[in-house]
Figure 1: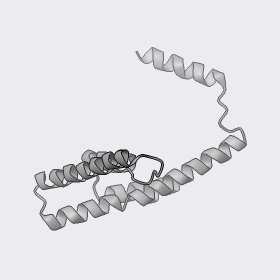
Figure 2: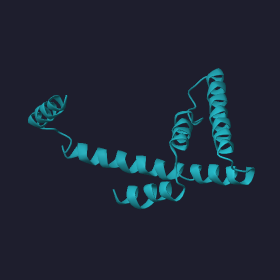
Figure 3: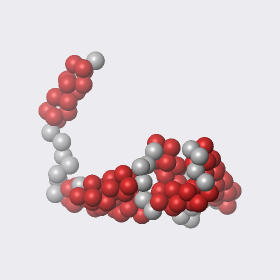
Figure 4: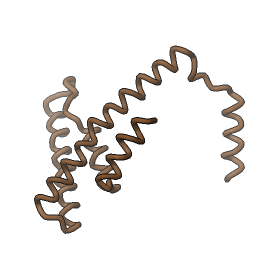
Length: 123
């Protein structure tokens, strides 16, 4: 949690991340070209989709009235967040693995029942 608050959230606050920027960031993660088991045609789709995301992000920044240099800085600062999120993923995956080894992920069925009743009572 320390890493999330002190590194990831701090970066997001410093760049004043918007919903559009967050969607672009997620799109870049989803359409990464690091998968080597896909066909050449599929890789073309990945690259075109990623290009479209970047064009949309650029157009979004221009619609805010930013000049070219500001667009470049905003885009770079947004993408500097990617390695931090990737590191967070590795931390969470490692924590999940450790918790799994020690049986810390086993949920008592009564917790699920209580949660269900709380949710149903709200509706």
